[in-house]
Length: 208
Image (tube, rainbow, N blue to C red; front, side, top):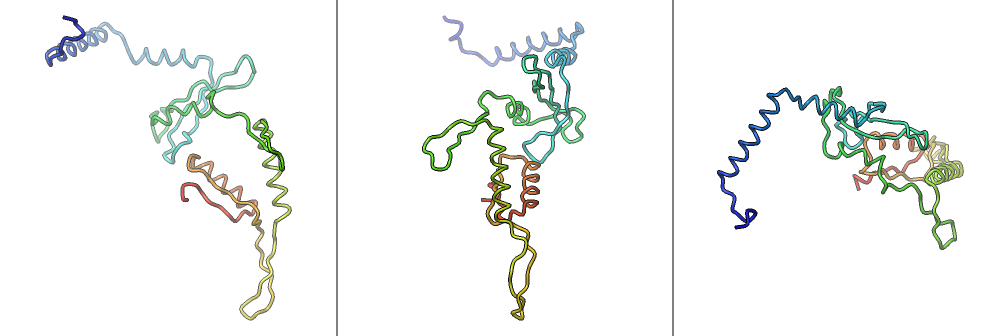
């Protein structure tokens, strides 16, 4: 009979579990410290790196992270090589959820877009532009639009019908839509920026 096709009984499972337990016990009895081995392996993983304490960007819990940064010999720039829980965090004590544990992929991911598609006014074809160019272009358009449409005062009437000027300091030509996949801190800063610019139309994807 093929040994792979032989049915496994409950006794076989118990026998295998007992053997594994005895083997592990023997390893520990001979002085093998698994925790120390884990620490040693981790040190090898991030050898020569600089740890930067941060906070997981996903939710409002605020779990602490340690971002290991190392100088890239090819470019001379710092690059992230590892992200893990910060054991000194009073919030999470080094624990991270599956999303937080995989947050390295937010910054280090070959699938992450580094260019944008741009179609000039009146054009029919799309062209690739660097991300830095797109950021600068957006900033220029926001400033131009705000300067052109900014309103300081608004002419209206009081309850007696007398003309009055109300101070509004806003622009009605720009709107802001926050994203539910962005973290709380980003949305907070986005809101503060829009209010500082005098933007009135503020909304978030999570509320739509």
